[in-house]
Length: 250
Image (cartoon, rainbow, N blue to C red; front, side, top):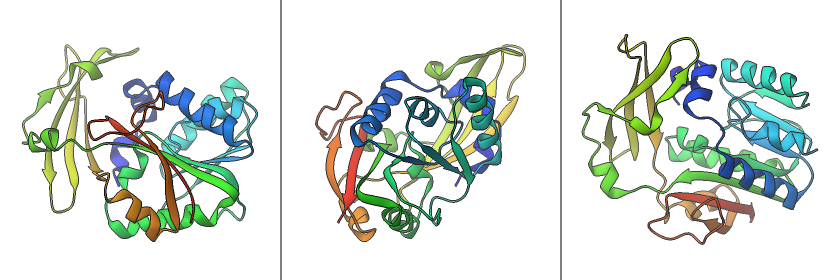
């Protein structure tokens, strides 16, 4: 897990605002499935609040208290009702089932151990109503990109954003890849034009390769029924940037 990276919820939102294609994808899935929605790793509610605004009863589970507080603030600001619960997606018991469970924005990849992923899938299965579905996304690992994770600090121009108090914020990332663990270990550096490294945060993300994913799901009592390669719903291919997965109980 990478709790320090998510301790500043406002910084997170400026760095990763809710992208329209991803938000639209999950809203459409909620409408297609109908009924209640549970999001694991709901963060600041970038996906869940729009889904709740469409009329779906929504619950968000999140480990970070800072992220939960910001999600509640944003929901109140928009007049949207949702239930937020502090908890760990590996093991939780909400005492009810849901028609749709989602895990968005690579949140599942914070679980590094195989057993953690299996435990999460088993917890999801216990919370799926009859006919319910799990839908999640994770990046599709690129061997070429992983091979270039050499620990060198590099500027990520595409991630620059404007902080209302500090101005333009630049982002540098230094990362290495632990092939045995399938985990990319990174440090993110945030700097303004006048001040270097105003914030530094570690972030560790697991790679889940396409061929291992169905087996992990099966161990958790789930099966993969569809896999898309982008937010438009194009079929998954080896060079697709993401894995958008639709799963059901086995």
